[in-house]
Length: 349
Image (cartoon, rainbow, N blue to C red; front, side):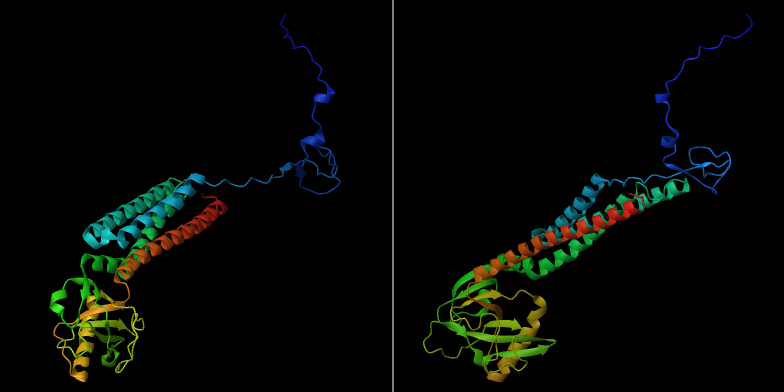
């Protein structure tokens, strides 16, 4: 009665027992050959040796697809918005609002960057992974900062070279049938575009150039409805250009704009204030050299169709914007690919 009852013995089928070779197929022994009482089917294992695990190759780490999409599109969208804001009408009409938006954007991005760096510092202090979970956020903030700076630079270039000229010219009046023999510069103070009467041409024999780093070239616009093209009482309309004549541009050395187009009789108003003073000096030289008078000179770029030339500035601005969008998207995809490859390689993605 005091004896404990044992469980009945149940025989196990031999086929259910795993074979020794299958158990140790992925293991190897460390030691020398010909041991005594080696464990396992390998007779060359040393006495009392322990099994060393043969590591299996690990699978490739999977990339964070959502983080990749966010880091591609968010900086690209930021670049497009800043590029558009600095290129077009908002920059022209409300430049102070543009500056305010950019300052706020920089403050927010720098705050997020510092906050994420502080969070990583806390994790490192707690002994956790240094960059795990924070690497993509840092990359995103740095990419957005680079996108904003790139958008400012590209937008200002696009605005100064194309869009600003379009807005300046269209903000002024457009005049048709302008006769340089009967009209004076005071009458067209607000002219942005001028289409002169048939018979108007450039008097290349009275052209002149003024040298100051660049060469500022001028030629009087003459002709009109008066027969015989007599000398004018005041030469108030001048075709201008930069670096398209010699510094002593006298006697037909003017090659600016569409000077050789027989159908050209239109003018786009010179809008660069920084160039106007040098063109006035060139006109003063022409007055002294040819004994002529220019009471109130107005400066124009000589073209055939002033309306078409005006909207060409707008088309150039949109073309530059489209090229910039595509270029930055390709650049951002490349940087994200490099970053993702590095994160996977160093196991911090």
